[in-house]
Length: 166
Image (cartoon, rainbow, N blue to C red; front, side, top):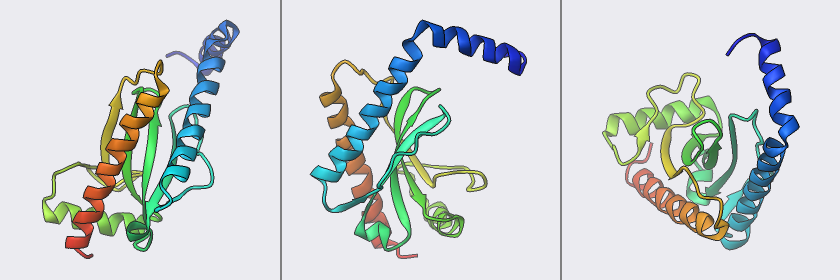
């Protein structure tokens, strides 16, 4: 894309059409509802009190079963705007925890989920695509797909870490 001025001109033109505002609002409402769904349906998780809205790059919230919370780890349910997909990530509460667990996973050779190439500049340790090109026509079905895959990811990670204490 060209200069900042040209980008702002394009941004203004798109905003005048109105679809971006409607889509963004709908997505944020869906993500808030998804967070509330996990909070209400899964009391075994500590669910973050807020949604990270991002800069139209990613929007996410975190959940953590006690087994991960005690280790300073969390699960992030993420919508990547440009890739237009939902992912689930294992992340650390700080860079030291992230680095320690990344090293444990790398040295173990566990390849059940994608290990990020490096923790330098990364927000995650493991990443997994939940829904590629989501269909927003049936939000209940979308929520079920995200929930089921997130629960499986969480179970797998917790199981692995229980067998490989760091």
